[in-house]
Image (cartoon, rainbow, N blue to C red; front, side, top):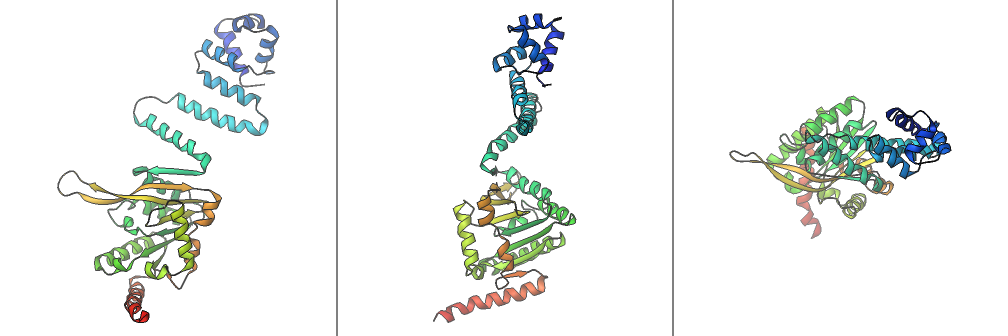
Length: 327
């Protein structure tokens, strides 16, 4: 029995047709064909699907997809069912409120991108999508952030993404996040305080926090290769990336500063302008930040402000000694 056969019964009911002969006459086909189709033993051709749809005031696309599903092999039927569901949603979206058609339009754009195994988001959607990914994490998240200031209070990822991290940690998801700090940043006491506050916030949320000083980390061939691979794949100069469950990756492609406030002096907010999500096997392999966490010569686990300031002092001394060593 096919699903399309139900439409033949609907034709008979709507037009008070009492036999397959009158049904065939109404549809302009042979009586044996009408009998077979009504009993689900034959699938109508596209032209007939369109004619039936018009007689029933239905969208022809609906019947065309059902006919394709009915004649598809068993292993392919679920995909046609999925396609039919998607089309059904698209065909019945109300025009108001305006949010609904825009939402469906966005879903349509995402579906078109799926074949390439990448999704790209811009503007506010880029920041929101990171939250959604964290909400789906089941086992692990490994993240690396050079543009770590977006975790500060009042910035783009605070508090929504931080709360999503906390919720994931409560689900027993193991989250590791590496903040990469620069010498220039660490020469400013306020920026040092910002970094400490960010790491404290992360730690309180259940994240295992690590940090590294870029000028030291860049000496590692592993980091150099990773940095080059991110450049090849179009990442922003300041790398922000996260790997979820070792199967899907996000990274920032561009950043921007948005003024918040229409009255008085606006507050500049750093935003991820463009975010890419990928599950391409080669990108998962090449852009995995996990090896960085094993580089104990350059990467340190955050264990509070005291030990952090000790490491910072060592790093500062090493930077001062560099010119002497070069002589």
